[in-house]
Picture 1: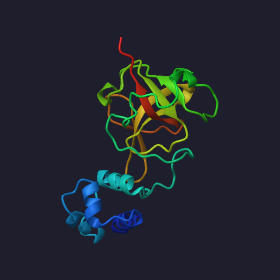
Picture 2 (picture 1 turned 45 degrees about the vertical axis):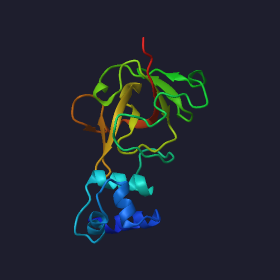
Picture 3 (picture 1 turned 135 degrees about the vertical axis):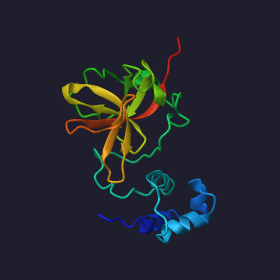
Length: 200
């Protein structure tokens, strides 16, 4: 399928009521000429640029009509942080939230946020270490760059970084190796929204 990226960028910008200059500034371009060239079809945006436009304009990426699991909306682009709430406890204590054992995930539909303890240092290059406590929300759509919990075969939970390509194929980075396409028997059970590290 040949998707009209010029039209997609134009529609995203107009829906957000931004000028070409405002959009250029928001996504880190030096002037409106770059956005103008994309909208006129002279240049094609890279996938990273498209993710930024999607985030800034709150506009869905092309091909994203088959999101894994039906959840609500959230976007976060790359990086190894979880926003300003990374190490905070906003409004409730951790003891209010159940702690799930990733080695043996219960066979149930996850409706409320839960905690998970990171079992290893496989993602330390992404800033996630063994014994970190993750707050996981099952009611959020997993987007490119999010850290997620994936349930694999045999009820085992894996902490991974989700990467989407231009065709909306889902890849998981869960260790130092290259990302791998998500296995057909695996499914996303939630998006990491908070990280709590206990220093001993």
